[in-house]
Amino acid sequence: MSAFPTDLFTGCRFAVLGLGRNGAPAAKALAAMGADVQAWDDGEAGRASLDDAGAFSGTLTVAPIEKLDGFTALVMSPGIPHILPKVHPVAALAKAAGVPILSDADLLFQAVRKAGSKARFAGVTGTNGKSTTTALLAHLLRHASLPVAEGGNLGPASLSLPLLPDDGVYVLEMSSYMLERLQTLHFDTACLLNLTPDHLDRHGDMAGYAAAKAHIFDRMDGNDLAVIGNGDQWCRDIAAEVKARGIPVESISGRDDEAANFHMHDGAVVSHGMIIARPGATLPGTHNAENACAALAMALKLGAAPDILAKGIGDFAGLAHRQKRVADINGVAYVDDSKATNADAASRALGCYEHIVWIAGGMAKAGGIDDLVPYFPRITRTFLIGRDAPALAETLAAHDVPYEIAGDLEHAVPAARKAAEAGGAEVVLLSPACASFDQFASFEARGRRFAELVHGLEENA
Image (tube, rainbow, N blue to C red; front, side, top):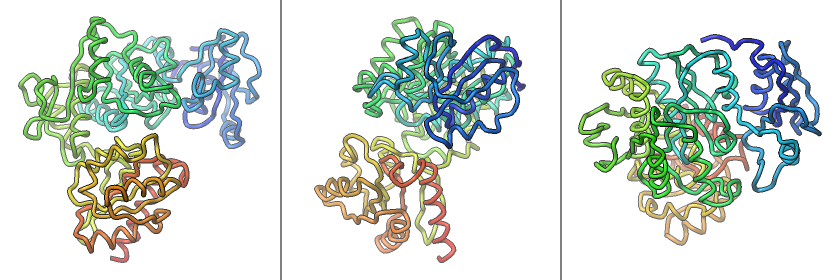
């Protein structure tokens, strides 16, 4: 691993809009590679992130973006819309000037190739499971002694990753927002785990959302490998389209489904009649089995030996805020699944336990928790937090699920402990099925606060 040459983008002009987790590193990296960069964020905190950016071979100017004539590209933070629900004014400027709007992942690919590296790219997308699959694949490849850098929508921004040698692999988690802004990035292997309704305001409808996700397979050919879940019709249709283009496809399932090329059988991942590996305790439930199938299929394509994969999957530590066991107090497990920001994600955790005290709520997505009705018999009591607690309460009441509106985690956690110990529940599960932004800066902040409160319970146990 090494730094990129300082003259890769000499003579190029980039505009960067949005100086958060993706934008600020992108602006700095492009300037360090010789580009002239004009960056802007409407928030003072974002602009302040570049105050001490340092010296570059290119230039970095913080100024409002009022025209884009003569620029090479516009890099917009993924959360800023360029089409729906409303075109951002700077995106309109780019369109008028004929300037492409790119993801920083696309520019990483361009930089790697400009630097002469033949490092391969692995992409991971889907509605749920992206982060775990990305981290697991990177973990497995490290076990196989391959140089690896992971990031994108998970962890480090794409352009903050180092230059890898020819045998290296970039493992990138790709959101739908990132995928709709790709023009050159070619994945050697890519997976689409699953599709359920999400971000429909950004993509217009489910067809638009699925089309954005399918961009991960653009520019692939017969030498590459697409890995696609077979658990929903949207994915099955995309798999058929990808196969029709002559791209090899391996189907995956987290269940004992022989129709899938990689599936589970007696607790092991099986492929074409052979046992590949047995996921450990840090990968509970059928959803994590699906993640494991995807990561193993991609790792095999990238040259990892089966015996190495079988060993490596056993010591995967799991990811924070994704069914992470925080503590066990008086026979009750406390599990942080704060990453579950929609009902489908919450269903994965709810399906793993028989007797649950559930903490849910926040900013509900379309449909609320209606899709979770099949899991309600597992819930002994629910404690609701956040802005949309009253709306969620209506759904619970309609199905006779006991609940209380706790308001916030500070009240919900101790109340959940009392309910679990009194009612014989095996787990207190934070799996909100809602976004966090009404009370927290991120789902990570929500999960950290849950863990703090649980550890406070431990001290008083």
